[in-house]
Amino acid sequence: MRVLGIETTCDETAAAVVDSPREGEATILSNEVLSQIAEHAPYGGVVPEIAARAHVEVLDRIVARALKTAGVKLADLDGIAAAAGPGLIGGVIVGLTTAKALALVAGKPFIAVNHLEAHALSARLTDKVQFPYLLLLASGGHTQLLAVRGVGDYVRLGTTMDDAIGEAFDKTAKLLGLPYPGGPQVEKEAERGDPERFALPRPLSGRPIPDFSLSGLKTAVRLEAERIAPLTATDVADLCASFQAAVVDVVVDRTRAGLRVFREQCGKPNALVVAGGVAANQSIRRALQRLAGEAGLRLVAPPLALCTDNGAMIAWAGAERLRLGLVDGLETAPRARWPL
Ligand code: KG4
Ligand code: ZN
Image 1 (cartoon, rainbow, N blue to C red):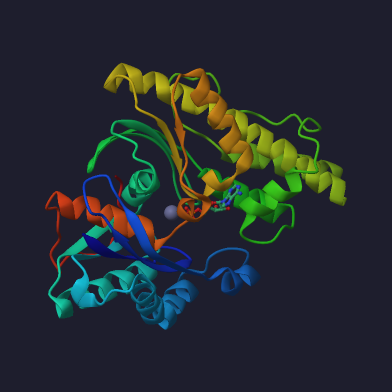
Image 2: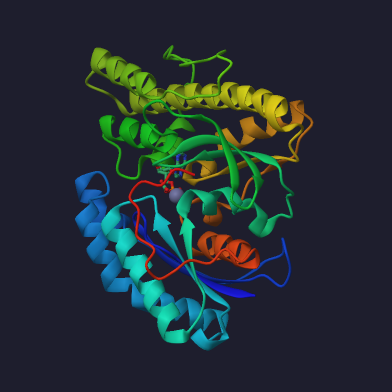
């Protein structure tokens, strides 16, 4: 079963072909991603109108390249999937409309994929992890702990009350004068900083409900930065290290609470899975590895290229849905907001 997947919900224009010969098995035949980081960097964040126009300009080429690399023609595909949301609506429209047009022309089933569901299922693309599992989804737009019980069967155990984790990284980077996108920059600075120099809060630590709150932490960084301004390079590194250490503690504490709630509601999970752009952070990965070990679970983290936004996860979610007969009509509307 070969599925083309298109991703345009934020600032990556991506297309991929995934082959799934049987349930739970996948081969990535191609995975083309074109990042718009350079276009948005001067503004310190993603500008929706610029993103949508950039998707229009390059998507045809990216799709053609994904098909070529995979060595398939439209006629060889079994389905065409696109992320139909949640995301920046202009970009979503571009990807969704393109996928619908291709499906119509080629006479293939069309699958409208929820971008969050694609992140949730991405671990199964490279690892045969069985349902149910606890997923920590941490990206620039979302921070959730989900019980993933099957394709289309998700229970949200906790979510952020304010900023997403990636957003907290991005905002912290911005206030410290680091370039966009901030996550990787903060991680790099933190490597040579002192994580104990600043005593930053660990919001919601110890609470039984596995929700997150990140905005207070970001504000605490701002207040420390203002207190010691002007900042030297060492100050910036120490602030980044202290911020990242606080995020790691928060992630571990909240995920531990998530595991407890999972056991009460769904029994024992088969694994702890982390997905979303923030899963690229090595300190967070290492801490989750320790937590999983403590809990007697395996940590499953997709390879870095599949943690950040990509077409393969859309194609894969499309294949998992297609296998269950979950196809969509061409009237399916794009959605800026679409909770799982
Ligand atoms: O999943 P993703 O590519 O896009 C969506 O938000 O859906 O995630 C991007 C987010 C950004 O906020 C970025 O700063 C963050 O993931 N990120 C990181 C790292 N790499 C990317 N955060 C912390 N450490 C990193 N190494
Ligand atoms: Zn994403």
